Image (tube, rainbow, N blue to C red):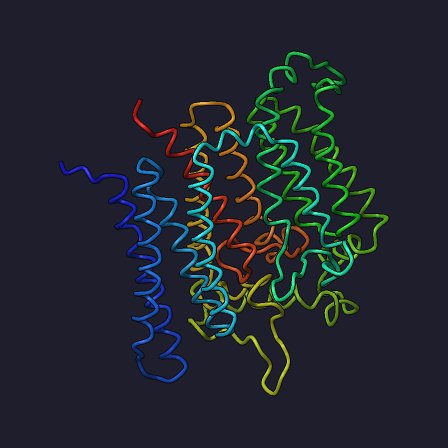
Length: 433
């Protein structure tokens, strides 16, 4: 029996992503002009060349890292580029540039954080910087209100969402802090009304995370990031302590805070009202238009979809039928054109990435590595859940991007850093001896 090495498996896994991108662009060009174009082969070759450059770097720098994560991300990135190009060619070119920047930062992260465990020494600094990043959109000049929330900042021609980078810093802080205090949280806990309550002395910094989640509801009005951060915190708390009661207490705290602030803050209350009934005659043509059109688009796709490039995104003569199809509602475009089968295929790729991430956490050789891998994987999975759940009306719709698929430079760059950290943990865990 021939055994294929990890890096060779990774190499073979990159071929489908390039073929997917080539086939996608071929379909676009045929749909636009009824003829084939050599550009599809050119784009596929360029994308494969970039992926091969990343693969060769990993072959040298992290020879024992997980062989499937990078190819799975390449599949998502290639699919995202095709979908964005089908929606807006100029945005697709910008996304391709950000893909290159993300790949460069991916390599830089591996080079400069080869011993990622030294991040533990700076956990409070990392936490402070992360909270500052979350608050930056509220600062005058650089920040501003967009679609009812403070999500992005502008530095000259560059606009990015600081929350994408803050999520990584928060996970690093939680992994480091829980590594040192998880035993104290369990041994010093007290029972109250059938629930295990950890000692306040050591639980205080974690309460600050809950406060930060609530602050996001009030100050930057970002419901999606608030849910994503706090859910990741509860996931890490459970991994660290193996106490379900801590998670129950945390869910109760978040529910109480969300109800209190949701009843007092107009922005959050409006989001919940739209979510409950987007087809309300008073909302469907205004605030509820986005989610209503998303649901119509997904229903229109059916099981097998209308066909690639067939979704009606713009009203003839001007106007937008499906708002923000390249960012918030790109999942609705996928479901419309590729149907339930295509949408489930995309979600399956995300599930495979999450499975590999948790496998890395299980193989890790020290507590910090386990918690870091579990936290990064959890926050990645929750980001997918928040945006897909919002588009399908499972939860209120928020402005979170679909990782590696939606248009957004800060999203693709930050998720490449997240991928680099996971591969660093994986290489150390799988290294012989």
